[in-house]
Image 1 (tube, rainbow, N blue to C red):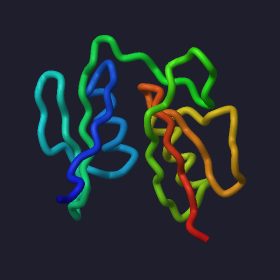
Image 2: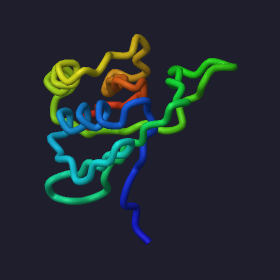
Image 3: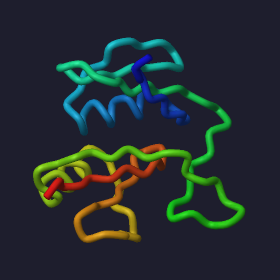
Image 4: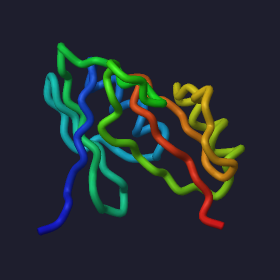
Amino acid sequence: MRLSTIVLDCRDAHELAAFYTRLLGWRIEREEPDWVIAGAPGGGPRLAFQSEPAYVRPIWPSKPGEQQMMLHLDIEVDSLEESGAHALACGAVLADYQPQDDVRVYFDPAGHPFCLWVNA
């Protein structure tokens, strides 16, 4: 067995796929009306995006009674400042709450949290 794809639900699969391809420099591998798969040029696990009309944005940090985050992506970067500026230019939003000095938490356009981190 090997992990091939991580699927993120959202309201608009094409919008979220466009965000992650800009952010990561990936390419679209497959598109359907409610389904898009993106992959890294060098291979590895892919990201898929599925349009879900009943999608509810997660709340982070967690709050009782609210939609909980189910997963998040950790993206290793060389510079938090440069990569953070790139993420913002791609359409990410910096989270108000930042739990660590060496990690920055952002939200993608569908509200999924993701972390940029530097391996020191």
